[in-house]
Image (cartoon, rainbow, N blue to C red; front, top):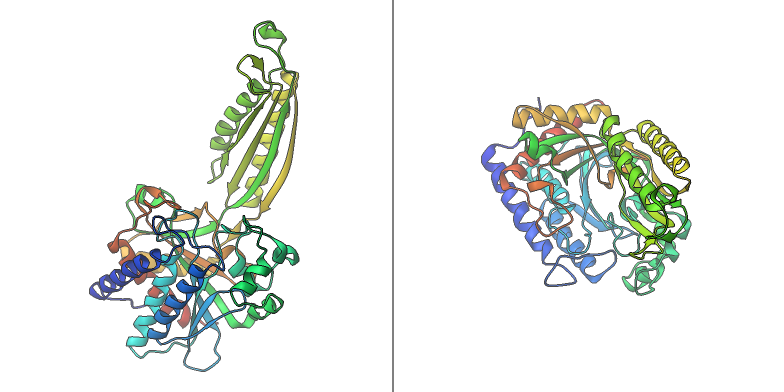
Length: 420
């Protein structure tokens, strides 16, 4: 079992992380709410601040071609493959202060401990503050982590923000050369693994009364625009048995979405998030209803099976009521399975710190999705109060953060000792 931080040192490390989260939370485009988006002046200021902390932890730092802030703590031999640690530094609008930032700053504490001990590992450690995981500004996600994998779609540079500024223009304004994006790509041999610490953004750890958990997979997702079409009619003159009420059909299906998904289990979730009724008058039977369906789960097979069942059920309901139903998928991302060996390594480290562990999937997306296309990934979750995230009330405890840093360090040390 890998050694880890003594409790007193871990507490001091957690206090530093909490204080630094407060410092980063003050770097915002608005003084009243935390908002920090890709290629903004606040993004560059946050990178500068994190870079200074990286240097203080004994790291060589650089900002790459897509705006990630990177630091390297060399191994016993120069040029050794690295364990990559980190998370993102961008935020949603009116954000909490721990989503993303907690992972970057906890990674710095792992390196800081080794630096204070003047200890080098067989592997190097690199820490990265990804530039844009949330997609808040341009509506495209994982720009930073897709940069290091070399998988930027060709049309990303032309995507625009709410002011009509394109990614290419924003890069130029921030001092980046959009023609040099490929320089951010890292070779497959550069990294042997990616470990990310992140707040859970859900209630499962709190419900289990545990500070830490081990992520099994990052949920895949399917999103669809759906439509029930019937016949609009006078609310007072069309008898109940002769109606083609699109809203009644949609309501019956929404109920089916809930109970069928619960029956499937296996961490699958389904959400009808929007509903639009036409013509939308109080005294008119709805002739058309547009709605969205979002399905997520840790296994693509399960997602696809549930989706097929739900769409079949919609057709059955529509036929029974004299309606038509159509659906068009507009978003798809496959599930990302966490590496089995990394899961075991993190599980052992979490058990070492808190006595037992909990395995659970992540319902939210993370940079590990992009990184996992090229390298093995593993994640450790830290409990957050009430499962609240993407909100100013987002909160973690110093004690939980201390345990997270202990487990993070133990996992890094354990992985570094394994034959690569």
